[in-house]
Image (cartoon, rainbow, N blue to C red; front, side, top):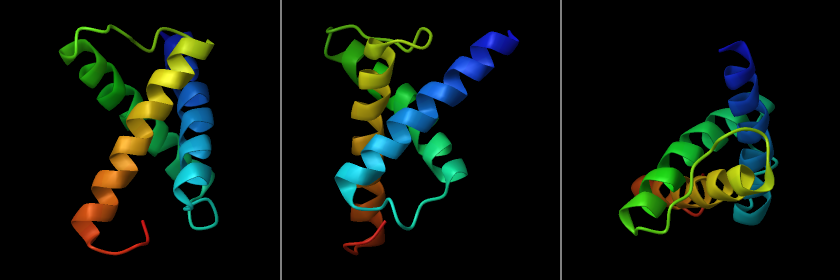
Length: 89
């Protein structure tokens, strides 16, 4: 259980950080925000890929998990940008 939580935090941190660089929010996001965006991104990315019947889940610290979480984090940041109605997230 503890290793699962640590895995989600590590994957979330990496995916959230990469997504913040791509979306241009890196200077405004803290490490905690990167982790939150990455973890929620992992949930969003896994859900979307399962709906599309592609499959994909965050299952440990590996490249597939990081890619799924990164994909979801990008979508999450795009949604936040649209909801806020600004160019900034």
